[in-house]
Amino acid sequence: MHVVPRFRATAVVAAAALLMAGCATGPGLAKTNSPRRTVQAGADANSPDPSTTKSAQAGKPVDPAFAAERLRLINPCALIDKDVLQAVGTPSKYTSSSYTRCSNYMKDKGGKTLNITLDIGYSLTSTEVKNATKQIAGLKSGEQKLSNTSCFISAVTQESPAQAVRVQVSTGTGGTEACEPGRTVLEGAVRKLRGNPQKYSPPKGSPVEVDPCTIVDKATLAPVLGASPRALPFGLHQCSWTGQSAQMQIEFKTARIPADGKFDSKSVEADLGGGVKGYQAFKDGSFPTCELVLVRTKDQSNAGEIVEFIVAASKEKELDRCQAAQAFAKAVLPSLPQA
Image (cartoon, rainbow, N blue to C red; front, top):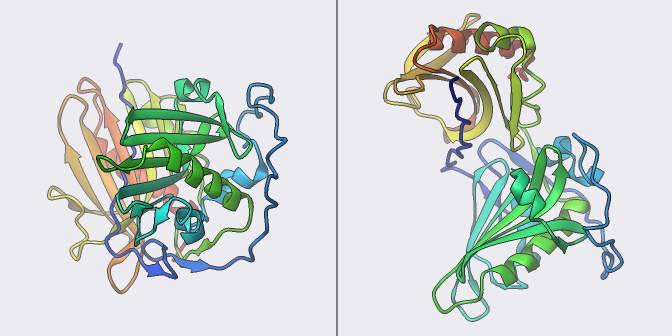
């Protein structure tokens, strides 16, 4: 029996993320303003203890405000805007390395280092869900304190597959204890998420709103994975499938687009027909892999969005991985938003 490793989600740093009105909007993604909705103070004071709430239905969020199709368009920087961060210190510039992540490397109220990173649609393990025995803003929450200067706090927004709004906090030596400001920021972020936070205004051709798990049909997967592949969603913009000692994956990312289109030193051009070109790179090893990248949007500063297709299989499996990646991309292309 071959063990098929799960791909790690990797955020491509968007060097040209726009900083508008104090919020990074991500490459090629402008923002739109939505009217604010006031949340009454103490609105969650009578929320039921998380240990007594019923588990949400499989595939459904615990509240419609946290539905994946809604979260995909929300700018995470808008959830930790200045009024949220000023409760714990002095905000600095915002940086965004993916659709769903925003960071602010700021100072606490004593002038010490306080780094805040927020993720929405963050995939949790079953153990993390089980350990979510606390409560924040009416949601089950869990904490992982690595040290006095590092803390991860998650508020569960969906239980199956498990997703959360997560805050990562790191502080300098002698600064604030990390979990305390994290709770404050996470509560503020969840409240804003229930309101009308700033949204992306995607350019034509952007894949940001697409559910990667539903855009691929079984007929596309079967030649590599067999008739009954297992779907493994990760976050809001990545999905992989496993079966018969192989794995296939699709992911939508923000990225800086290289002038030559090559995202890897081993990249070679792949003609996908109809004037569409991709760039593929074969990587040998214990689980040989082919990665194929398609550019979907690009602005004048070469910041944009890409779709990455991956086909991997055990060394023993006879398979032209790059040919399979091209077939994968060709099958999905008609279902992607057209530029």
